[in-house]
Image (cartoon, rainbow, N blue to C red):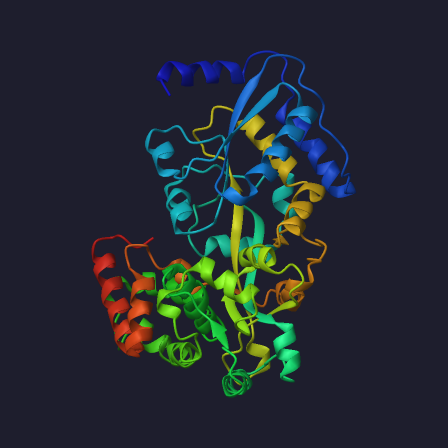
Length: 437
């Protein structure tokens, strides 16, 4: 986009009889307070603005497109272009980011938060409707002083997906402790049933499942990585925290779990896992809610449940693995700040955000949000309700550290200790270059 176009947009922002930001936000506050699901903001008196809305999840592009068309009808005078390009980095490099972003909250987004190129949303009425314990998850990656840079939109919760019929046929309980989980795996193995289906070929499935689930209930990932960043190049076996020391017991668990994988796990990919689990070829699957739709395509009547992996002998230690699947943000470079904030307020309305999360097997980030009604996720609801959750440790590891490949090698060799020493060495190397977030 040329400088002239940017200047033209700046002129458009101040031209004509636009609905004032103050009046719109006041109306939004009233809608939040009253839960007025059907209230629409007043129409724009004249002129026109085009917003770019960037949303990364390909599977919900059509869903958001419908919402954007609804916003256009209610708002009047604003056209929203749905941008679904794969990468956001080139947009920021050219100083031409979309006016509103809806993106997975992760280390990539953290770079922009830390640089201060995302605006402050703390004064929006909807910012005060977000659950504090969910809002705090965004701070684990990065913060910018004095700003609320991201409004959490969708919380995905993951655990062990299990085949209820197989459990029932073998009279197996949902395990609540580590020893019970191992006993279940042993019983299944003796009965000739594959306990856990794994898909090592797609390495992200290893760190999202095996690694994250084994770590999360034994180590608080957010706090661990905060302290790891502080140590920087001093990370090692004798430091206050380290992979080698703090992840030793979790990786013992991971090593045991991997012994119950399907024999061909090394050559199976994510799609293979969804197909096999849908056909009843394994009792458990270490995957998130994103897999449920694919499994249902194989067998829509398959009885499925989900539980958090127990990795200690204390049932109260169980937690669900979560991530902020989508968060809303507005770049400071957007020339249409008022209209962008109106769109964010529209998307954050309880009737909009709660419906999206219900329909897409996720959890609303709002206070007093209704529970997720899908029975396949019912086993995780109580953990989300009381914030017994953690962000996956693998999400804090920079992509320049090939965690998935390390896990592949550790599973095949059994040398998880060596993997942890390598992770410490990689962290020191990146810290020395100032490359950790």
